[in-house]
Amino acid sequence: MTDAQQPKRARREDRQRRARQQVKRAAVAAAVVVVLAAFIVLRPDSEPFVGSAAPELELTSVEGEVVNLGDYLGRPVAITFMHSY
Image 1 (cartoon, rainbow, N blue to C red):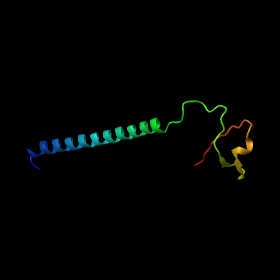
Image 2 (cartoon, rainbow, N blue to C red):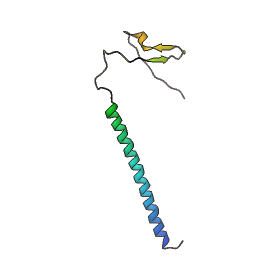
Image 3 (spheres, one colour):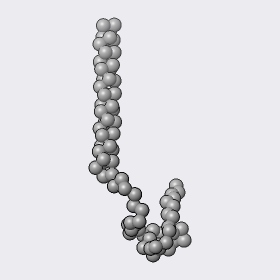
């Protein structure tokens, strides 16, 4: 490669690098817009649900038995969601 071609190649590589950065920024910006739109459109009511019925929920306990939230109607319930790897 001649000395005259090196600056051209460097400029071309720089343009390509900047173009990739712009694409990455645009993708991140689009993802942020989608997430924010989802929060705005799908957000739950801002009012607390105190006093209203909880949704139907059926879970499996650590002992393997199926527990229905409706079985505890009228009693306070604390639910802990855990995971393992």
